[in-house]
Length: 198
Image (cartoon, rainbow, N blue to C red; front, top):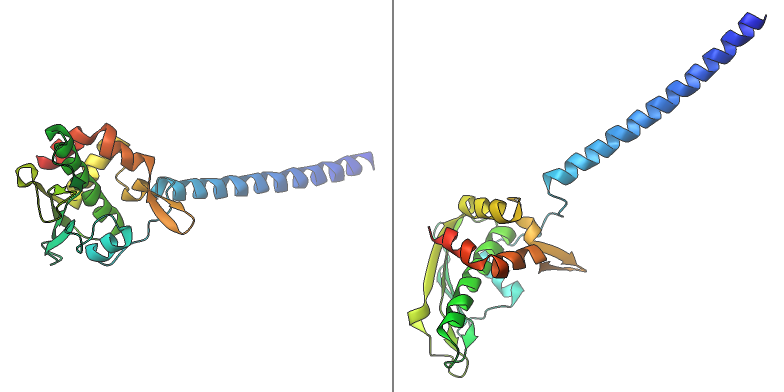
């Protein structure tokens, strides 16, 4: 009788332990699956995409055709070429004008790869006079033609990931440039621009 009772209790304990083990294993698997999903997108939510660069730029409201700060040289998907122009004062230094040009190119190139599905883009940046919107400082003009693959390699080198979505973060209903994007545009501006140029 005692042996049978011990056997029944042992069986009950074993079954109870087994179900706990199964529960723990199930939770672990779910956690690993969630982790793997996160790793695939580098803990970044998928970024909203625009069907064209034009729609993307119109939504961003950084440059406007009406004031001369935006020109579409070509809107053909196989040969997209845009010109952007930040306003500057004539008295501002040469270094500052050159820095603005580089930053505009880095910004628009990476913005385009992050927010559209294009494979390559050409961006020209030329400062425009703040007081005379018809006066461009052509001596500072720079043009970069770059493909998505090369841009992804630069992203990987400086931010540790080739996921363009990490350049933006969601704030309410808006996607705004992240601190990581600022790193490309400010802290690593010259290095990033030089690699884009080569």
